[in-house]
Image 1 (tube, helix red, strand yellow):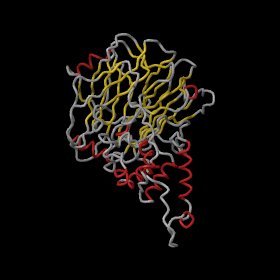
Image 2 (tube, rainbow, N blue to C red):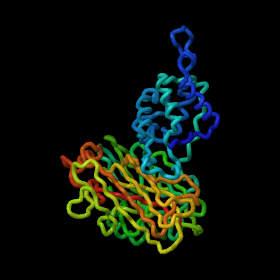
Image 3 (tube, rainbow, N blue to C red):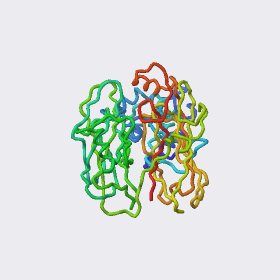
Image 4 (spheres, one colour):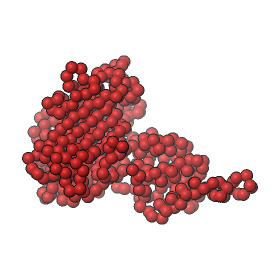
Length: 470
């Protein structure tokens, strides 16, 4: 599906389309040198006039000095040096990182909010700049750069950071959990949440999870006195639920009007950080959690609920192509195209249908593809009986995020009683999967092994968390 230009400046969009039309004009007609001795025309695409605004809009959220990107793209020299790589990575969909896409077997009805990918027109413009030799243009005639969005929750009511930071080093990624007390002793509702790492060069992504009082004894045993502990598999404690996900360049998560996420009195928030030290030593990192809360009960609440990770046929696990005598979640060693599927009925005992605001897909290192579909017992007005809710055909453990549908609440996909959710996950447990090699290195193993459902590095998951409005 073609995507519109993301830039909101109509004159700039018109200029881009005009320049792209020039790219199709033969050299003899366009004024470029064709052997007839005519002087070379000024390049029709330059860094200062056309490419710098595009890169500022789509790339420098990560590719900035001190950012998570391995190099900066803020200057002409930096971008021109890497233009061939830039074009290649953008064309193959590797950059900017964004896993949720429509395919022939799964086309979502809505676009995604805050999608950083370049439009087809912008990709063609970048490709044209490469073909011209990446001309710089006149800095005195530079186009204005787009205003960067705010990467903090400006009206946060509660801000908290760990007292003890974590200093990471070496070549191995680490997953560290910090237990934070927002200091809220009465039931409230969260309407905005964001995380702000202190060191963007090492903080790869973060996941915030609410742990109500019922789960805090187990949490205290894990975290100890300093409130910091290793936690690859995330937070799996009684009553715990997702609050938000941060990746470099992501905007604060804000609920729609009159919708809030319930936060129990005396709850703790556990922030899991994925650290990527890349062979370097770093100062202790302390990620700040920003919350906007209200004690006014909203008309509707947003609840994150997970589906998947079915351990047995009784729980919804379907027979798989490599089952050995019984239905089981097992990804065999040296199998490149293994499928695990789960069929999960919804039992709500109410005819009401509930809008789905967001989807958070999740697998581990061996996963390569995840898809969720719903078969509706009683579709809402204008809804299809069967709908694909999300598809990540090139799952990348490095770039997990919450995907929000770009639609008003009354147009969001809905779930209701009697619907059946089907989640299908594909795995590559061979050495052709670079993440398998990485997992084996971390576990000091020489070759792939059978992988089962679980929370550790060499375990797997097949899970999607939905933000559902009740």
